[in-house]
Image 1: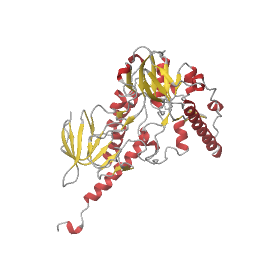
Image 2: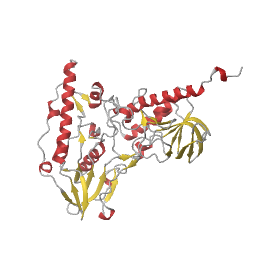
Image 3: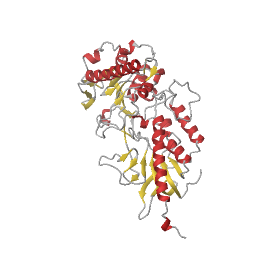
Image 4: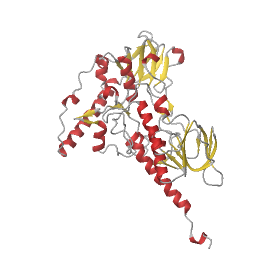
Length: 423
Protein backbone atom coordinates (compact mmCIF):
# COMPACT_ATOMS: atom_id res chain seq x y z
CA UNK A 1 0.00 0.00 0.00
CA UNK A 2 1.32 3.44 -0.96
CA UNK A 3 2.03 5.56 2.09
CA UNK A 4 -0.29 8.49 2.61
CA UNK A 5 1.26 11.94 2.29
CA UNK A 6 1.54 14.07 5.39
CA UNK A 7 0.13 17.03 3.50
CA UNK A 8 -1.74 17.72 0.29
CA UNK A 9 -3.97 20.37 -1.19
CA UNK A 10 -7.22 18.38 -1.38
CA UNK A 11 -8.43 15.22 0.30
CA UNK A 12 -11.33 13.53 -1.46
CA UNK A 13 -13.27 11.18 0.83
CA UNK A 14 -14.88 8.33 -1.10
CA UNK A 15 -13.84 6.52 -4.28
CA UNK A 16 -17.21 5.95 -5.85
CA UNK A 17 -18.43 7.74 -8.94
CA UNK A 18 -18.19 11.17 -7.30
CA UNK A 19 -14.69 10.72 -5.94
CA UNK A 20 -13.30 9.31 -9.19
CA UNK A 21 -14.96 12.06 -11.24
CA UNK A 22 -13.55 14.91 -9.18
CA UNK A 23 -10.13 13.25 -9.10
CA UNK A 24 -10.07 13.31 -12.90
CA UNK A 25 -10.73 17.05 -12.99
CA UNK A 26 -8.35 17.86 -10.14
CA UNK A 27 -5.61 15.84 -11.79
CA UNK A 28 -6.13 17.55 -15.14
CA UNK A 29 -5.83 20.93 -13.38
CA UNK A 30 -2.63 19.93 -11.58
CA UNK A 31 -4.16 20.05 -8.09
CA UNK A 32 -2.28 17.80 -5.63
CA UNK A 33 -4.80 15.48 -4.00
CA UNK A 34 -5.54 12.01 -2.68
CA UNK A 35 -8.74 9.96 -2.75
CA UNK A 36 -9.40 7.97 0.42
CA UNK A 37 -11.68 4.91 0.34
CA UNK A 38 -12.42 2.63 3.28
CA UNK A 39 -13.10 -0.36 1.00
CA UNK A 40 -12.46 -0.90 -2.68
CA UNK A 41 -13.16 1.53 -5.50
CA UNK A 42 -16.95 1.63 -5.97
CA UNK A 43 -17.34 -0.54 -2.87
CA UNK A 44 -21.01 0.31 -2.41
CA UNK A 45 -21.82 -1.03 -5.87
CA UNK A 46 -20.15 -4.32 -5.00
CA UNK A 47 -21.18 -5.02 -1.42
CA UNK A 48 -24.23 -2.89 -0.62
CA UNK A 49 -26.50 -3.89 -3.50
CA UNK A 50 -28.48 -7.03 -4.25
CA UNK A 51 -27.01 -9.62 -6.60
CA UNK A 52 -29.23 -8.98 -9.63
CA UNK A 53 -29.13 -5.17 -9.49
CA UNK A 54 -28.65 -3.36 -12.79
CA UNK A 55 -28.29 0.34 -13.48
CA UNK A 56 -31.53 2.26 -13.89
CA UNK A 57 -30.24 3.97 -17.02
CA UNK A 58 -28.92 2.45 -20.26
CA UNK A 59 -25.19 2.12 -20.84
CA UNK A 60 -25.14 4.80 -23.55
CA UNK A 61 -26.41 7.33 -21.02
CA UNK A 62 -25.25 6.41 -17.52
CA UNK A 63 -21.50 6.80 -18.02
CA UNK A 64 -18.70 9.33 -17.97
CA UNK A 65 -18.12 11.24 -21.24
CA UNK A 66 -14.66 9.77 -21.84
CA UNK A 67 -15.39 6.06 -21.50
CA UNK A 68 -18.06 3.64 -22.73
CA UNK A 69 -19.10 0.28 -21.29
CA UNK A 70 -16.95 -1.97 -23.47
CA UNK A 71 -18.70 -5.23 -22.54
CA UNK A 72 -22.27 -3.94 -22.57
CA UNK A 73 -24.62 -3.09 -25.43
CA UNK A 74 -25.29 0.67 -25.39
CA UNK A 75 -29.04 0.13 -24.90
CA UNK A 76 -28.59 -2.50 -22.18
CA UNK A 77 -28.54 -1.87 -18.43
CA UNK A 78 -25.17 -2.85 -16.92
CA UNK A 79 -25.10 -4.97 -13.78
CA UNK A 80 -23.65 -3.76 -10.52
CA UNK A 81 -20.33 -5.54 -10.99
CA UNK A 82 -19.98 -4.06 -14.47
CA UNK A 83 -20.55 -0.57 -13.04
CA UNK A 84 -17.99 -1.17 -10.29
CA UNK A 85 -15.45 -2.51 -12.79
CA UNK A 86 -16.14 0.48 -15.05
CA UNK A 87 -15.32 2.90 -12.22
CA UNK A 88 -12.19 0.99 -11.22
CA UNK A 89 -11.01 1.00 -14.85
CA UNK A 90 -11.78 4.70 -15.11
CA UNK A 91 -9.70 5.41 -12.00
CA UNK A 92 -6.77 3.71 -13.74
CA UNK A 93 -7.46 5.60 -16.96
CA UNK A 94 -7.21 8.99 -15.22
CA UNK A 95 -4.46 7.88 -12.80
CA UNK A 96 -6.59 8.77 -9.79
CA UNK A 97 -4.44 8.70 -6.61
CA UNK A 98 -6.79 6.36 -4.74
CA UNK A 99 -5.80 4.85 -1.39
CA UNK A 100 -8.06 1.92 -0.56
CA UNK A 101 -8.52 0.48 2.91
CA UNK A 102 -8.28 3.91 4.54
CA UNK A 103 -11.06 4.89 6.91
CA UNK A 104 -11.49 8.60 7.62
CA UNK A 105 -12.27 8.95 11.31
CA UNK A 106 -12.36 12.69 11.78
CA UNK A 107 -11.89 15.99 9.95
CA UNK A 108 -11.42 19.21 11.94
CA UNK A 109 -10.36 22.72 11.00
CA UNK A 110 -6.82 23.71 11.94
CA UNK A 111 -6.41 26.39 14.57
CA UNK A 112 -4.99 29.74 13.43
CA UNK A 113 -3.96 28.41 10.03
CA UNK A 114 -5.53 27.45 6.75
CA UNK A 115 -6.82 23.95 6.18
CA UNK A 116 -7.94 20.84 7.97
CA UNK A 117 -6.60 17.95 10.00
CA UNK A 118 -7.70 14.61 8.53
CA UNK A 119 -7.41 11.72 10.99
CA UNK A 120 -7.45 8.34 9.25
CA UNK A 121 -6.81 4.69 10.03
CA UNK A 122 -3.42 5.14 8.29
CA UNK A 123 -2.32 8.35 9.94
CA UNK A 124 -2.93 12.11 9.81
CA UNK A 125 -3.02 14.29 6.70
CA UNK A 126 -3.08 18.07 6.65
CA UNK A 127 -5.16 19.34 3.73
CA UNK A 128 -6.19 22.75 2.51
CA UNK A 129 -9.52 21.45 1.20
CA UNK A 130 -11.90 18.52 1.70
CA UNK A 131 -14.29 17.06 -0.88
CA UNK A 132 -16.93 14.89 0.78
CA UNK A 133 -17.77 12.42 -2.00
CA UNK A 134 -19.38 9.68 0.07
CA UNK A 135 -22.65 9.79 -1.85
CA UNK A 136 -26.29 9.71 -0.74
CA UNK A 137 -26.49 6.07 0.39
CA UNK A 138 -24.77 6.31 3.77
CA UNK A 139 -27.03 5.14 6.59
CA UNK A 140 -29.96 2.80 5.82
CA UNK A 141 -33.22 4.01 7.32
CA UNK A 142 -35.56 1.44 8.89
CA UNK A 143 -38.65 2.96 10.53
CA UNK A 144 -39.11 1.77 14.15
CA UNK A 145 -42.44 0.23 13.22
CA UNK A 146 -42.16 -3.54 13.74
CA UNK A 147 -40.43 -4.62 16.98
CA UNK A 148 -37.82 -7.36 17.07
CA UNK A 149 -40.18 -9.26 19.33
CA UNK A 150 -42.42 -9.84 16.32
CA UNK A 151 -40.08 -12.67 15.40
CA UNK A 152 -39.62 -11.61 11.77
CA UNK A 153 -36.46 -11.41 9.71
CA UNK A 154 -36.11 -7.70 8.99
CA UNK A 155 -33.46 -6.21 6.74
CA UNK A 156 -32.93 -3.08 4.72
CA UNK A 157 -32.59 -3.24 0.93
CA UNK A 158 -28.88 -2.41 1.47
CA UNK A 159 -28.49 -5.84 3.10
CA UNK A 160 -30.77 -7.81 0.78
CA UNK A 161 -28.90 -10.01 -1.72
CA UNK A 162 -31.29 -12.63 -3.17
CA UNK A 163 -34.48 -14.59 -2.35
CA UNK A 164 -32.52 -17.53 -0.93
CA UNK A 165 -31.21 -15.24 1.80
CA UNK A 166 -34.67 -15.06 3.40
CA UNK A 167 -36.37 -17.78 5.46
CA UNK A 168 -39.27 -19.75 3.90
CA UNK A 169 -42.57 -17.91 3.86
CA UNK A 170 -44.19 -14.78 2.51
CA UNK A 171 -42.36 -11.45 2.37
CA UNK A 172 -43.53 -7.88 2.91
CA UNK A 173 -41.56 -5.28 0.93
CA UNK A 174 -42.03 -1.76 2.28
CA UNK A 175 -41.36 0.94 -0.30
CA UNK A 176 -42.10 0.80 -4.02
CA UNK A 177 -39.44 2.99 -5.55
CA UNK A 178 -36.68 1.66 -7.79
CA UNK A 179 -35.27 -0.69 -5.14
CA UNK A 180 -38.51 -1.90 -3.60
CA UNK A 181 -40.29 -2.58 -6.87
CA UNK A 182 -37.33 -4.51 -8.30
CA UNK A 183 -36.82 -6.58 -5.14
CA UNK A 184 -40.54 -7.35 -4.88
CA UNK A 185 -40.66 -8.49 -8.50
CA UNK A 186 -37.60 -10.68 -8.03
CA UNK A 187 -39.11 -12.30 -4.92
CA UNK A 188 -42.36 -12.95 -6.75
CA UNK A 189 -40.53 -14.54 -9.69
CA UNK A 190 -38.73 -16.85 -7.23
CA UNK A 191 -42.07 -18.30 -6.13
CA UNK A 192 -42.53 -16.27 -2.97
CA UNK A 193 -45.81 -14.78 -1.90
CA UNK A 194 -45.17 -11.04 -1.82
CA UNK A 195 -46.94 -8.07 -0.24
CA UNK A 196 -45.77 -4.65 -1.49
CA UNK A 197 -46.45 -1.44 0.45
CA UNK A 198 -46.82 1.45 -2.00
CA UNK A 199 -46.53 5.07 -0.95
CA UNK A 200 -46.55 8.30 -2.99
CA UNK A 201 -44.39 7.94 -6.08
CA UNK A 202 -43.73 9.04 -9.63
CA UNK A 203 -44.01 6.28 -12.24
CA UNK A 204 -42.30 7.24 -15.51
CA UNK A 205 -42.25 5.12 -18.66
CA UNK A 206 -39.13 3.04 -19.10
CA UNK A 207 -39.27 3.91 -22.80
CA UNK A 208 -41.75 5.63 -25.08
CA UNK A 209 -42.00 5.82 -28.85
CA UNK A 210 -38.73 3.99 -29.25
CA UNK A 211 -36.67 6.19 -26.92
CA UNK A 212 -35.57 5.53 -23.34
CA UNK A 213 -36.89 7.70 -20.55
CA UNK A 214 -33.37 9.07 -19.98
CA UNK A 215 -33.45 10.42 -23.55
CA UNK A 216 -36.83 12.05 -23.00
CA UNK A 217 -35.59 13.69 -19.80
CA UNK A 218 -32.69 15.10 -21.78
CA UNK A 219 -34.58 16.57 -24.74
CA UNK A 220 -37.33 17.89 -22.46
CA UNK A 221 -34.74 19.66 -20.29
CA UNK A 222 -35.72 17.68 -17.19
CA UNK A 223 -32.19 16.67 -16.23
CA UNK A 224 -31.26 20.34 -15.94
CA UNK A 225 -34.07 21.26 -13.56
CA UNK A 226 -32.30 23.09 -10.75
CA UNK A 227 -32.33 22.12 -7.10
CA UNK A 228 -35.82 22.44 -5.62
CA UNK A 229 -36.60 24.18 -2.37
CA UNK A 230 -34.94 22.24 0.49
CA UNK A 231 -38.37 21.82 2.05
CA UNK A 232 -39.70 20.03 -1.03
CA UNK A 233 -40.51 16.44 -0.08
CA UNK A 234 -38.44 13.73 -1.71
CA UNK A 235 -40.53 11.90 -4.28
CA UNK A 236 -39.91 8.19 -4.85
CA UNK A 237 -39.29 7.23 -8.48
CA UNK A 238 -40.57 3.82 -9.55
CA UNK A 239 -38.25 2.98 -12.44
CA UNK A 240 -36.28 -0.11 -13.34
CA UNK A 241 -33.71 -1.45 -15.77
CA UNK A 242 -34.30 -5.05 -14.65
CA UNK A 243 -35.37 -7.75 -17.11
CA UNK A 244 -34.12 -5.73 -20.04
CA UNK A 245 -35.91 -2.59 -18.89
CA UNK A 246 -39.68 -2.39 -18.44
CA UNK A 247 -42.02 0.26 -17.12
CA UNK A 248 -42.86 -0.49 -13.50
CA UNK A 249 -46.51 -1.60 -13.60
CA UNK A 250 -48.07 -2.34 -10.22
CA UNK A 251 -51.23 -3.70 -11.83
CA UNK A 252 -49.10 -6.24 -13.67
CA UNK A 253 -47.47 -7.15 -10.38
CA UNK A 254 -50.92 -7.79 -8.89
CA UNK A 255 -52.09 -9.78 -11.89
CA UNK A 256 -48.97 -11.94 -11.50
CA UNK A 257 -49.93 -12.72 -7.91
CA UNK A 258 -48.47 -9.90 -5.79
CA UNK A 259 -50.67 -8.26 -3.17
CA UNK A 260 -50.47 -4.48 -3.15
CA UNK A 261 -50.85 -2.58 0.11
CA UNK A 262 -50.95 1.04 1.21
CA UNK A 263 -48.28 2.62 3.36
CA UNK A 264 -47.28 0.72 6.50
CA UNK A 265 -48.28 2.94 9.43
CA UNK A 266 -48.35 0.72 12.52
CA UNK A 267 -47.91 -2.68 14.10
CA UNK A 268 -49.85 -4.18 16.98
CA UNK A 269 -50.70 -7.68 18.20
CA UNK A 270 -49.01 -9.35 15.27
CA UNK A 271 -50.81 -7.24 12.69
CA UNK A 272 -49.37 -4.69 10.26
CA UNK A 273 -51.65 -1.68 9.85
CA UNK A 274 -51.89 0.00 6.45
CA UNK A 275 -53.00 3.49 5.41
CA UNK A 276 -56.07 3.89 3.23
CA UNK A 277 -54.05 5.49 0.43
CA UNK A 278 -53.25 2.69 -2.02
CA UNK A 279 -55.76 3.64 -4.74
CA UNK A 280 -54.78 7.30 -4.47
CA UNK A 281 -51.05 6.55 -4.71
CA UNK A 282 -51.60 4.31 -7.74
CA UNK A 283 -53.73 6.99 -9.42
CA UNK A 284 -51.14 9.70 -8.78
CA UNK A 285 -48.44 7.49 -10.28
CA UNK A 286 -50.64 6.95 -13.33
CA UNK A 287 -51.21 10.69 -13.67
CA UNK A 288 -47.46 11.29 -13.71
CA UNK A 289 -46.99 8.61 -16.37
CA UNK A 290 -49.69 10.03 -18.63
CA UNK A 291 -48.49 13.61 -18.19
CA UNK A 292 -44.99 12.51 -19.20
CA UNK A 293 -46.36 10.83 -22.34
CA UNK A 294 -48.35 13.96 -23.21
CA UNK A 295 -45.27 16.13 -22.89
CA UNK A 296 -43.26 13.74 -25.03
CA UNK A 297 -45.96 13.76 -27.72
CA UNK A 298 -46.00 17.55 -27.80
CA UNK A 299 -42.22 17.63 -28.15
CA UNK A 300 -42.24 15.09 -30.98
CA UNK A 301 -44.97 16.99 -32.85
CA UNK A 302 -43.38 20.40 -32.35
CA UNK A 303 -40.03 19.16 -33.63
CA UNK A 304 -41.35 17.02 -36.46
CA UNK A 305 -39.84 13.80 -35.09
CA UNK A 306 -40.79 10.65 -36.95
CA UNK A 307 -41.08 8.41 -33.87
CA UNK A 308 -43.38 5.36 -33.91
CA UNK A 309 -46.69 5.69 -32.04
CA UNK A 310 -46.92 3.77 -28.80
CA UNK A 311 -50.58 3.45 -27.76
CA UNK A 312 -49.86 0.53 -25.41
CA UNK A 313 -47.97 2.89 -23.10
CA UNK A 314 -51.31 4.51 -22.17
CA UNK A 315 -53.14 1.27 -21.42
CA UNK A 316 -53.47 1.13 -17.65
CA UNK A 317 -55.81 -1.81 -17.26
CA UNK A 318 -58.44 -2.38 -14.59
CA UNK A 319 -57.61 -2.03 -10.93
CA UNK A 320 -57.00 -5.43 -9.32
CA UNK A 321 -59.00 -6.61 -6.33
CA UNK A 322 -56.31 -5.58 -3.85
CA UNK A 323 -56.66 -1.98 -5.05
CA UNK A 324 -60.47 -1.96 -5.23
CA UNK A 325 -60.80 -3.49 -1.75
CA UNK A 326 -57.50 -2.73 -0.03
CA UNK A 327 -56.28 -4.61 3.01
CA UNK A 328 -56.09 -2.34 6.03
CA UNK A 329 -54.71 -4.88 8.50
CA UNK A 330 -52.30 -7.67 7.56
CA UNK A 331 -52.20 -10.66 9.91
CA UNK A 332 -48.52 -11.59 9.84
CA UNK A 333 -48.89 -15.11 11.20
CA UNK A 334 -52.12 -15.77 9.32
CA UNK A 335 -50.45 -14.89 6.02
CA UNK A 336 -47.30 -16.86 6.91
CA UNK A 337 -45.09 -13.76 6.60
CA UNK A 338 -41.55 -14.55 7.69
CA UNK A 339 -39.62 -11.45 6.55
CA UNK A 340 -39.83 -7.74 5.86
CA UNK A 341 -37.53 -5.97 3.41
CA UNK A 342 -37.40 -2.25 4.12
CA UNK A 343 -36.75 -0.35 0.88
CA UNK A 344 -37.11 2.91 2.77
CA UNK A 345 -34.09 4.88 1.69
CA UNK A 346 -31.05 6.29 3.40
CA UNK A 347 -29.99 9.14 5.65
CA UNK A 348 -26.79 11.13 5.32
CA UNK A 349 -23.99 10.52 7.80
CA UNK A 350 -21.26 13.13 7.97
CA UNK A 351 -20.41 12.50 11.62
CA UNK A 352 -16.73 12.35 10.65
CA UNK A 353 -16.83 15.89 9.28
CA UNK A 354 -16.64 18.11 12.37
CA UNK A 355 -16.98 21.54 10.78
CA UNK A 356 -19.59 24.27 10.84
CA UNK A 357 -21.45 23.55 7.64
CA UNK A 358 -24.60 21.65 8.64
CA UNK A 359 -28.15 22.78 9.25
CA UNK A 360 -30.13 21.96 12.39
CA UNK A 361 -31.41 18.80 10.71
CA UNK A 362 -27.88 17.60 9.97
CA UNK A 363 -27.97 18.25 6.24
CA UNK A 364 -25.09 20.03 4.51
CA UNK A 365 -25.50 23.76 4.01
CA UNK A 366 -24.07 24.34 0.55
CA UNK A 367 -24.64 26.00 -2.80
CA UNK A 368 -23.85 23.73 -5.76
CA UNK A 369 -21.59 21.73 -3.46
CA UNK A 370 -19.69 24.71 -2.04
CA UNK A 371 -20.16 24.50 1.71
CA UNK A 372 -20.80 27.27 4.16
CA UNK A 373 -17.46 26.33 5.76
CA UNK A 374 -14.70 27.62 3.42
CA UNK A 375 -12.61 24.81 1.99
CA UNK A 376 -15.34 22.15 2.29
CA UNK A 377 -17.11 20.77 -0.78
CA UNK A 378 -19.84 18.17 -1.27
CA UNK A 379 -20.32 15.98 -4.31
CA UNK A 380 -22.66 13.18 -5.38
CA UNK A 381 -25.69 14.24 -3.34
CA UNK A 382 -29.19 14.26 -4.87
CA UNK A 383 -30.06 17.64 -6.35
CA UNK A 384 -26.61 19.01 -5.59
CA UNK A 385 -27.07 21.41 -8.49
CA UNK A 386 -29.73 19.79 -10.69
CA UNK A 387 -31.81 16.68 -11.15
CA UNK A 388 -28.96 14.66 -12.64
CA UNK A 389 -26.49 15.34 -9.83
CA UNK A 390 -26.52 11.91 -8.21
CA UNK A 391 -26.41 9.97 -11.48
CA UNK A 392 -23.21 8.60 -12.97
CA UNK A 393 -23.13 11.06 -15.86
CA UNK A 394 -24.44 14.00 -13.84
CA UNK A 395 -21.89 13.77 -11.06
CA UNK A 396 -19.08 14.14 -13.62
CA UNK A 397 -20.32 17.61 -14.59
CA UNK A 398 -20.81 18.67 -10.96
CA UNK A 399 -17.28 17.42 -10.26
CA UNK A 400 -15.89 19.65 -12.98
CA UNK A 401 -17.57 22.66 -11.37
CA UNK A 402 -16.17 21.79 -7.93
CA UNK A 403 -12.67 21.31 -9.35
CA UNK A 404 -12.93 24.69 -11.08
CA UNK A 405 -13.83 26.33 -7.77
CA UNK A 406 -10.83 24.72 -6.11
CA UNK A 407 -8.55 26.02 -8.86
CA UNK A 408 -10.01 29.51 -8.46
CA UNK A 409 -9.30 29.45 -4.72
CA UNK A 410 -5.77 28.18 -5.30
CA UNK A 411 -5.13 31.09 -7.67
CA UNK A 412 -6.30 33.59 -5.05
CA UNK A 413 -4.12 31.96 -2.40
CA UNK A 414 -1.08 32.07 -4.70
CA UNK A 415 -1.42 35.77 -5.43
CA UNK A 416 1.37 38.03 -4.21
CA UNK A 417 0.92 41.81 -4.34
CA UNK A 418 3.92 43.60 -5.88
CA UNK A 419 4.51 45.49 -2.65
CA UNK A 420 4.92 42.15 -0.85
CA UNK A 421 7.54 40.81 -3.24
CA UNK A 422 11.11 41.45 -2.14
CA UNK A 423 13.17 43.42 -4.64
